[in-house]
Length: 208
Image (tube, rainbow, N blue to C red; front, side):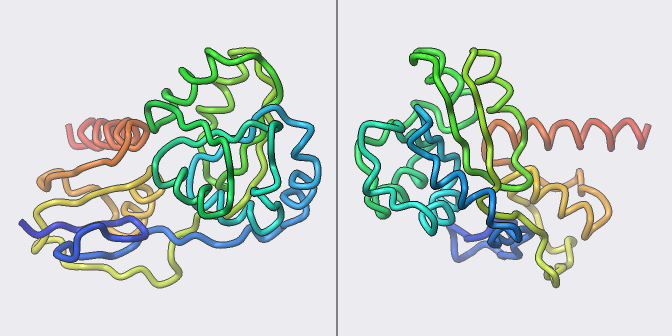
């Protein structure tokens, strides 16, 4: 089965890899630098991707953070990036998705949360934490963009397509015009799956 992989790094050398997102530094670094200077004013510092760790670490020595703020990680790859940056006492949520984050915070003392994130990050986590009576600030740590010259393949040769984020789905549609519903479409993660389901539903309605 020929598989097209749209994420930044392919986990399988047999996949046809055509990245539909690229990670870049935020064009305006001022807010990120300011947030890094004020980080100890927060009770929690939440990282939802390894890219956020990478770009945050350019402005803040994570290894020097001790009791405050508590460093929270969404999943294994993010935790590994934090460990490489020297972070200690990392709290990793049980389920590596937005809902797992909300479940973890629901059991914690209320306080201020800082979330370094992508320019295209969805508002799900900040909204859920705000509903739980946390004070939430977000700052753009990096930008998620469509590659300037994405490689377009002949989809007639592809049987399965793997999407790793809502952005990869959106950028696929920008490049190809529509989702090929005759193919096996796979989404990584709950939020990506929900986005994929919504797009498929809209396409089916338009066909009918």
